[in-house]
View (cartoon, rainbow, N blue to C red):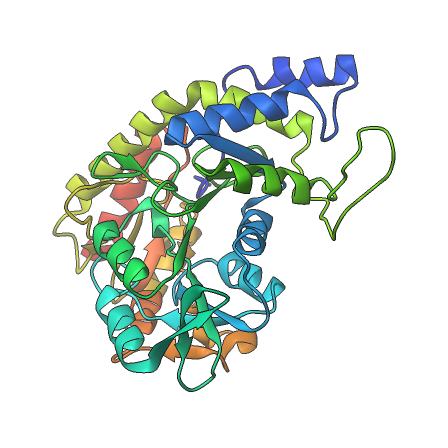
Length: 382
């Protein structure tokens, strides 16, 4: 079976993990944690990085840092991995789901702007201006764009909308390490960005994440909250509710080794993406995710749409090519059905019903790529 997306562990992973074991520095203190934070932040062009257990907790902490509460709304796209919405619910806030663009599968900015124009009003609270939903009376505190599959939408327009309606931007960049928009790296457009290093991501620590920001105060607060809000190096004194969210040194060691290889991995991923697009262009009714002008995605997980998705999905998996359907739209999941969903034609359902992800591992071989393409072409020719 050609796997869907597994890590490429071909560098110093064993060496650095062995170093952790030999020295006993395997927990949340250790030099690799600091090194990994710096490597990710520097690569993204952010001033500060704070390592955490995974991308989900990073998104949770990001909202706490910006003051999101149970009296707020947070805007998110209707198509994303569930972690985005779970993180919003952890704060007690209510999501506002925006349908996606039919071409690039990112948040539909026309719908976003229409909702904010027609359904919100501004109010001043403690000398700060916010937008409030006219119906729920809740503050619309933040917007969480998700760079779906490493693609990036029109960030210039999104930033303009957020500024007009007084929304803080928290970027869910969990899939987008290496992706840029107009030569600016994902995760650096808003106040906070969050990367994920789960086992299937472009590089992996097994489980891990990094919060990035250019705000020193937010970075310090993030580190404080993720280490149980402990204020003394000696005594067990804590000054607020904190979280055991810090990444451990042994996993950060893997991350350091992965970041050392990342330029080569990114280049290979983009070559893979180009190969699939070239070889599958015009095959059956396959349509690719559109890449907006100015965007240079990382090619994380190759996904395309076809009206025969379920047939193709079964065929590929039966013939040794591991493939998966896309994420179910958030509004269709039981725990989010009562949340606000802004749509006109429910594009999310169409994208979900027709999209399939195919093998995209960081170390996928040319032979495997050719086998995947050959198997897909055989399906459509039969």
